[in-house]
Length: 238
Image (tube, rainbow, N blue to C red; front, side, top):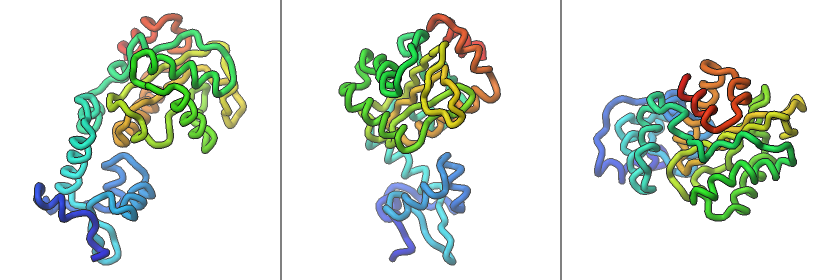
């Protein structure tokens, strides 16, 4: 019995596809680390079976499991699209001029996180500002979200604790630079605050931002933008 995890309920609505994936393949499919998948197995959260001491995952059951999770949490269209075809969602669609701050002032980590999250409160996405800031700080205390080269991507540890399902990104620019705990002690000038309550969308947004900065735009282009409209122009151009 221990070799079969979380499959009976799903079998009522889904048929085995015969397309089995290994641990590394399912991790790549879900865009998470293998150790994350192993933790999910231990918690009986993902359908799988152990064959000859190796975990295997049926593609049909996994797809059904993902859709069930989405349906149960009232996932919006954009989150579904981020799951099914993330490449088709431009970064510009995950933000708006109301979610862009081009005049962040240098300050403490808490002050920066408070200002970055303020647009989410104004938009009615975050209801308890203090609680949300505390979660952001707790995440930073675990490990810094600084990516390097003057860029940071703050977010809370567990996306499922967020209330709103719609994925959004707040962009903050601090042209003077601020101390945000970078490993090289360098100033951080560009912030991407990621907000969603869907784990897969969360991971794919992070991947999308990394890819955007690596392949499409020099961060200095965004840092030089003086208005939210100019930031959006850079995003749309790329």
